[in-house]
Amino acid sequence: MRRTATLTAIGLTIALLNACSSDPPVDNVPAGGAPSMGGTGASAGAGGSNTAGVGGSVTTGGTAGSTGGALTAGTSGAGGASAAGTSGMPAGGSGAGGVQTGGVGGIGGGTAGSGAASGAAGGGAAGGTAGSGAAGSGGAGGSAGSDPSGPPPLVYDVENTGADCPVATTFPAFNALPSIPEFPDPFLKEAGGRITSRAEWRCRRNEIGAQIQHWELGTKPPPTAGQVTATFSNNRLTVNVTVGSESISLSTTITMPNGANGRVPAVIRMAGSGVPISGPIASMTFTDGQLASQFPTRGQGPFWDLFPDNTVGAYAGWAWGVSRIIDGLQLTADQHQIDTRRLAVTGCSYAGKMALWAAAFDERIALAIPEESGGGGEASWRFMAGQPETENLEEAQGTGWYSTRLLDFGNPEAPKLPFDQHSLVAMVAPRAILAIQNTGIDRLGSQAGGASMKAAAEVYEALGVPERLGFSQAVASGHCAFPSSQAADVNAFVNRFLLGDESVNTSIKKDTYANTDMSEWVTWDTPALQ
Image (cartoon, rainbow, N blue to C red; front, side, top):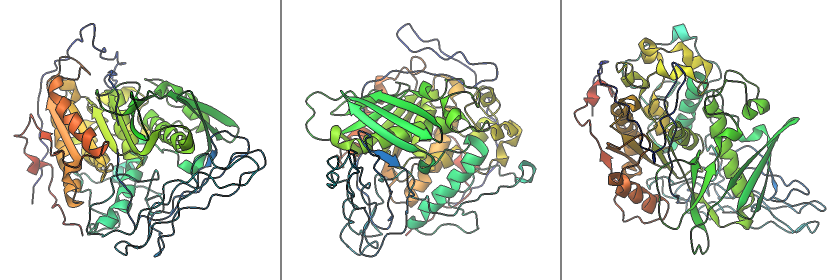
């Protein structure tokens, strides 16, 4: 489809709804701040298998005496699978008295379409008998070679399959950025030209991530930035991270579904919030306060103690923290029943943004369900620049959630962003995402959120998996007061992408603003990726 672009200004009326006593309150936001907190929920949960051609491995090293093993975060060699499909790692013997942590399972087998056998199973988390040198319990092996014309994986075994892809390390000065009134083309490579194959999305996704980190988020530290150890006892996961002389602990309690038998999916709830989810799915809370306060000052908090960079926003730290919780689940896999290939994240308001950021920057998350995430979530900065009642760029400047570089962009400068929030949503592709939007609160920018989701849907369409992106708009009785009318939409995505029921219809795009002229925002064609 061919589209043209102009920037339109749309005036709406603020109608912030006061929550009733049983509803979570709208946050008290500092002057000029971004909105809201909130939400409570039930329990939740992502599946699928990895395919060949993603290749490489993650190196994990055992730490003597550390129960649950240690992750010396190694490099992910995505893209370098051998033709024979020999991904995965051998599990070495444990050191005297120590616990051996073997390699995380291979990512991809042989050359795509070759049908080669999968890589040998990596040594699983928490391996051999102390002092015996026995192999660790087997991790998930890489999948066999696959037909490149088939659908891409539902989830991956590593945080970033594109970690080996070249990305920009220098960026133009703010004044040199061109003005792009429409949504930037997610298929356009930095070197010029557009991607033509599904295989190229891995590196294009990483280019987008580098741009977003530079201008909006700040740098999310890579897995190699510290040593991670984990313990699990009485359904309590504790993850310890050491960077140089500094250490912190992250912990969460896992609530198992009744009658759990074997491995079960799990949902990680940002700040304990998010949509209600039913079924045989475990639940745990990511406690954001263990790294930064809800309205932080950049540079002040445990995350910045580990990584002292006062330009980096809290969402980089929170996304990093969710990734370390997932590390802990992998490291202690032989001690619990969580299926780490079926993980979901959800959260509401500022925690809804957190869920989206976490999923965009960690490909081990199979399903994201951000609720009422507003500006800084899926809602487009460009679109909201003409909506003064929304959480637009100028309203987002009052907290330390984002990089200091985002302060350069007021509403008039929104077109200078080299990306927009549809790009952030597209980073989740080809994994599943369902955005829950509340059209009853103008500040949340649901029209801008719907526009972003429609633009990101073009990436899913190009990858051949349009059913993996959905959005649902409805009026809720209050902020983070999830309406029952959206329950069926959530259940559909959960049943398909966490519980594996492929018969469920997830073609869900419930749009209150169906008359939005997307030709004003999407001026690029959607390629037929091979």
